[in-house]
Amino acid sequence: MKDPLAIEGFDYVRFYAENGRQSALFFASAFGFKIESYRGPETKHFESADYLLTQNKIRLLISAPIRSTSEIAKLVFTHGMTASDVAFRVPDCEAFFNEAVKRGAKPDKSPQTTEDQFGTLKTASIKAYGDVIHSIIERSNYKGFLPGFVPYETFFSHPKQSELSGLKVIDHVVANVELGKMNHWVKFYEEVLGFSQFQHFSDNDISTEYSALMSKVMSGGNGKIKLPINEPAEGKRKSQIEEYLEFHNGPGVQHLAFATNNIIDVIRSLRERGVTFLSVPKTYYDELPSRVGSIKQELKELAELGILVDRDDDGYLLQLFTKPLHDRPTFFFEIIQREGSQGFGVGNFKALFEAIERDQALRGNL
Image (tube, rainbow, N blue to C red; front, side, top):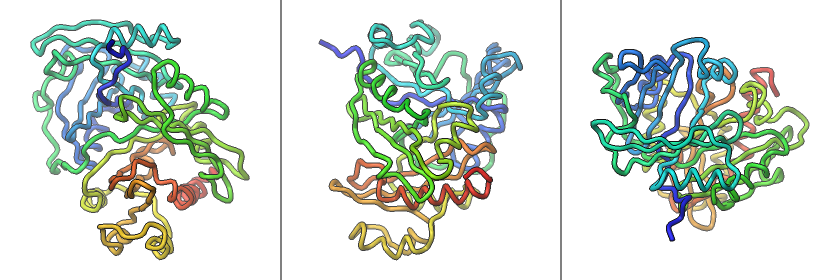
């Protein structure tokens, strides 16, 4: 029998932003995304102004409210710019939705079928943590993105800065939830959506002198979907998760990780484009050879660009985290290159969180 909860991968991640065009231009200018298509009042879509950005297999959808009374406007006012929809591509939308609801998922939108010049598209959505939803997209018979989208250049000029091609796929999407809620959402993904627990990090694994957190990684779609879920743990001062929850006004997506095959070239390009990253002390690189052993990349280049490295039984990974992407200290991106390792850089957690705490202290939130 076919699995009704089968998932083929991430379809897109949708952001709500106060100004969609400016946000789309920022993602294009800073991260090299192509603004591919647009939907809005000019195309007889009056709910929002929507911009599709692409880079290889990554799809980001940025939506902005047209009217102050819209639901999007309320969510932007509450959360700031926020990742509101982590969409899954599935082979059978109705089967997924019906099975998930039968197992206890709260429906957001029931299955609907749309037909246009691009074919037949089936969509639905269910509620997740906070105001986040999971759209369920069946597009095997659909050649477009979503109904109503037209090429961006129909109404606007493309930015002059060149596009990049180094970011390949969405590697994982991380959630921050309230104290005591991590296991609730672990149970949701296990029992309702058929995920399994991939890794577990305790406050002993993820702690500094001042703060700590706990995390469990959920995996679905035969490993194509990875969703770490974080909650704060008791510490001397306010943790990064508590800071997020305060300024986001509740749980939500903390960050997206993009996988690349050449993190050195990507980080160098992003820095040249003005992207700012968290930084670790230079002493981090003094200890690196003894901690991770032999790697293909030059240590000098990694230190110059601030790239972190970690090793496990399957290999190693390289990663780096941007600073928050808007004025609230909430959402950010991660760039990751996997050389065998399927972990999340547990060996970097202490250095990373101390870097976050330095920024928290500058903001007066530690």
